[in-house]
Image 1 (cartoon, each protein chain N blue to C red):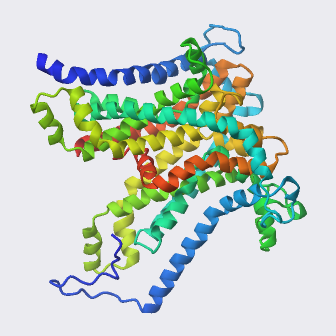
Image 2 (image 1 turned 180 degrees about the vertical axis):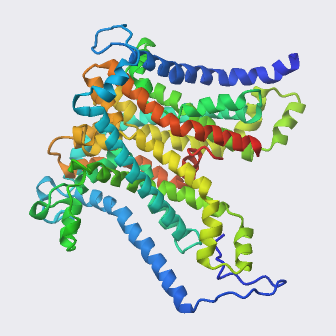
Image 3 (image 1 turned 180 degrees about the horizontal axis):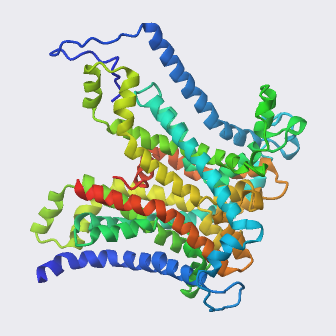
Length: 297
Length: 298
């Protein structure tokens, strides 16, 4: 789909239709305009990233109103050290949160997605719609009793509680990712052949479906890892700076009345590093999750 | 019958834990919140007095300084600017990229990268960029405007009491336009090549091709994008907490819930949450039902 109509040669069998031909000048102008716009937008989108990086390498005294957009006079890692001191423990905790969440949610999603993609029981669509609604709700609508429920269930506060809630509220999106994946990429014949051979649903799932599910898992794992890593809402309601994830710690570092911007920005970069690495190296699958989020398969 | 149980029983077994969890933690807890929203639990102490819709009526008619209506107004301004911004930029970027350009991957990757960040992290830099100082005190973007002789663009950003929420939408637009672009790009690429060829055979100009053939094909994508971004807008919390903190100027319902909980007014916080849920449900439920219906037909 990369060829354009004007560039495409007319099909040999059909006489070329009379077409208004634009001069070569118009093409050049159009192309220049297009690349120009693309480049300007590129710079605008990257501008905050420039500010983050540049400011993070300034030392506390190097930040004045003058020259705040310029490169540091002296590149200093002082602010990075300061940010790491404030964020280090929560950085580790967030891995302890996001990795189990990603794995558990994906497994649940794979099981649900498989059953729902193959099992057309009466009312299956209603059940699926009810499941999906769970990923759109504003979590404030469950948060008030949720605090009481998790403590009644005896789940330890902080990371364990957050693992639990992210797994529960991650079920809808993971189910959706796997349902769409199984519905579009795993042939029905494969499943039916297994049944003819007498394999039950569970065995079919374990030995036929799971081995071909890797792409689905990559998408779901990345999605859940990123969501859990970037979450602030559950974190602020269910944890604090001593036992919570990095977003809480970053907000504490940056939210002061007169914040140390250099350290805050170094902290924002530290906070963003894991998800950025995932995005840069596994971008294709990250986008897969984004697309699933709009429900349409 | 027995074979059906044998065939589908395990399936039920496999999904029942998830169904049970969602039943309790989504629908059960929503029910609980609704119950609290109709009680008189305005302090940390337990209280079961039933006041019906009293808390809701109070929010609309009897809130100090019309605080709830003020938060709705803020949300409306934010949502309109946010939606317009992301839809226009997303469509423009997709339009610029859809016919294939050199280094398309690079442009796509950069346009979409803010999606990988948390609002809390990007809020740090946007708080700095949207420095409200002007003239000699200008900082952040205002300083750049000053340097580029674009001083007239200097503005108080989100600290403007009337229209500050429009500025608050700027970082949100930065963060989500790439997502809308990705949706539109997938939409463009899903249009069958025959349609373009047919239009070319009919001698359509490029303008007519887009106006009459391609854009109409994108209507369903545009609707999805509007609904997904729109419902995110109504839930906006992280970004505002990170850029301005919880304060009157930029308060939206999601933030108001948090502020109300800090005072242990559970009944009022629940009532605001339920209204927020209704706002989201009004756009999401028809969308889900419609999507399921289309899917069944195909």
